[in-house]
Image 1 (spheres, one colour):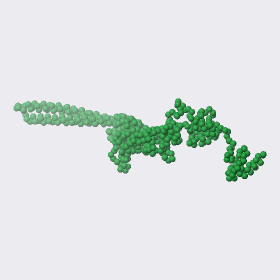
Image 2 (cartoon, one colour):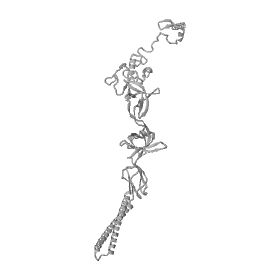
Image 3 (tube, one colour):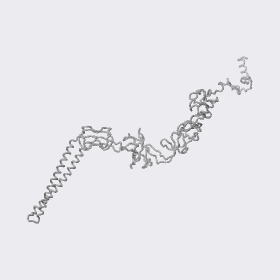
Image 4 (tube, helix red, strand yellow):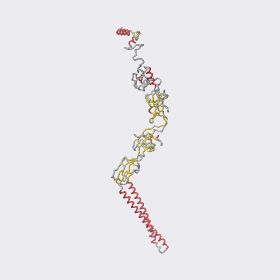
Amino acid sequence: MGITPFRSAAAALLAAGLSISGTSGVVSAQSPEKATALKPGAAAPGTRQPDATPAGKGAGGAGGGSAGAPGGAARGAGAAGRPTIVVVDALTRSQLTETVPIYGRVIALKSGVVAARVRGAVAEVRADVGTRVAKGDALITLESDMLTSERDLKTAELQEFQAKTVTAQAQLRLAEQELARIEKLRQSAAFSPARFDDKRREVERYRSTVAETAARIKQAVASLKIAEINLANAVIRAPYSGVVTQRHTESGAYLNIGERVVTMTSDEALEIEAEVPVTRLDGLTPDIRIMVDPESLPAFEATLRAIVPEENQLTRTRTIRFAPVGGTRPALLAANQSVVLRIPNGRPRMVTTALKDALLQRRGSPVMFVVADGKAVQRKVVLGEAFGDRFEIVSGLAPGELVVTRGNERLRPGQDVQIRGSRPPGGTDGKRGNRPGSVSGSGPASGPGSRPGGGRPPGTADTSGASPAASSPRASE
């Protein structure tokens, strides 16, 4: 029978509600409704179309990991059985307190203007802006010729008064001797009462002269000392160790007493000052240590030194001074530098905390994965306050439990996990071995990213023809 008559006969049978089964030529009855529901090229119920692919090959090709072939099914099971490597952290319970950032500034305890103490012209400037000086180093030198001459004059005056004192003392001794001889003649006829009284008055005069010259000597000594001090002040020296921040004079300028010469700042004695709200003072105990975070410098510790008992009525704050702990202050810390102080928000309390990296959001709720018996267990948690890089766990977890901090983004509840650094299950020597459901690959790899034994890294796609549903770990749930 030719092809055209055969098609005509088949069409007639279909119109009568009959169908031809495959290649056997058996005619079966069929209702008109089902006959009209069949589409061209579709097989009737109970029939089988010829296979489009060779036997033993599924959608993934030969050994490609698809369920269509025995080798592919084994390798797919091997990939699904490999545990996910994760990093964990144990929940801790300790005494902590929440801190709030408050801006402050660095205060130099020794900073100010160095002024001239004597009048004079500037002879030499020995320190410039940025010069680090020690206590007693010369900053400015004044012309000292007049001061030297004044000192010499005071020295001569002192010597003059010393000589006058010697003369007065000699005259006093002579007068006292004469008075003594006259007094011995009191019982004789040669005694003269008038001469005795005159000599006694002369002794008193010489005694007054000696006292006067002694006072003049003291005045001369004081004047000489002042002249020496003025001469010494002609060299203006650093009152403390520090750095010159400003220079206010030049060589040749004339300085009066009290006129500014340089401005200095000592970077050895520094404190931290901040305006702290009165509501935060409860956590500032005398022995507390806080963290101070300067910009672009390492953080350091500071202790509470003083709470100024005066409140700002506008800001409701008080001035607090902190002293840096010895050895922790950065060397480049500067006066008036802005810093952030971590002020405690209340007194310390016992809290259970977990690293912030363990927190996930699933369906709008905060969750964390806990490792228990090699499985990932999802727990809903209730969070409290933040303490640095950790969250307070109010409920949902207990201290000591291991929460996943790395590799938790793609975890599923009940998924097998392996903690990084531990021995994988099924291995005895620390090397990767064949696991149940895996097959040692002796044939070619099924596609890019494949591993020996038919497994693939999670998240890699099979390019040999397998469907995404067969190769994606998340789609195989």
